[in-house]
Image (cartoon, rainbow, N blue to C red; front, side, top):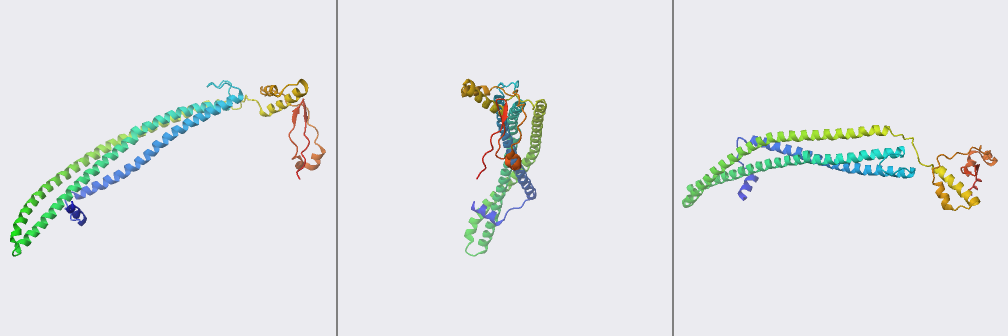
Length: 339
């Protein structure tokens, strides 16, 4: 191991005719891996976005449905799914909520489809690229082993020559010669193994390029089809919603007027308290009845008080709005000026 590490650090690697081809393959695989990792990151982001979109549409639909029920309760309409008796805005909230619920299910199915037809295949492609890199690494390891053995043979040959020409060291030459023979046999085996691995890796890379091109084409095609089908369904759902919204009569309003309800409460309390002795609870119940058809006051407004006409528009700050009491209109006295 130390000898192989030394060979790698010193750069005394054996060069072969196909080294340039392997360098090109290495650059191709590295660039392919970088591109696939970028696509995988963006695919993960898109899948997460569609998942969040499905959850948001679900919450949006629930919110619209709740608003529709609130408006129905205020107008006294039925709280069922039927729009009969509902106001225009309640119908609007309800149909939009139903569409949002349907789109939430559609987005959730699309999210699962994207995982199966796009994200997982991209990750499988990355695994195949990693397998090619492992094969290239094994070929490089065979090259290091072969280079180390060749360097070892050269070193033994140099030692053998030194022992032969040095007087008194002839005895060591026999041992070095035997070791050199074994090293030469190991070098030949390493060379054969290195060349076999190199050719096998090249064949596997060619097969990988063909299969990867076919599979990537199928992945991108299925992804494009899934996006087309999803957005067509999405556009169809929104398109079907538009005629429903356009047919809603937004001017329809069946709820009571809060202004008239407040005036009715004051009138009922005044009449009941001074005439018939009614309590406050019946008066409130009576005020809760629909008052949209209550006639407005027909008496002409009183003349502007002199204090207001003399002070001009700034003198009207302390004057409140008129209130209807017993069929007449009266104004409260102006509030005292602030000190």
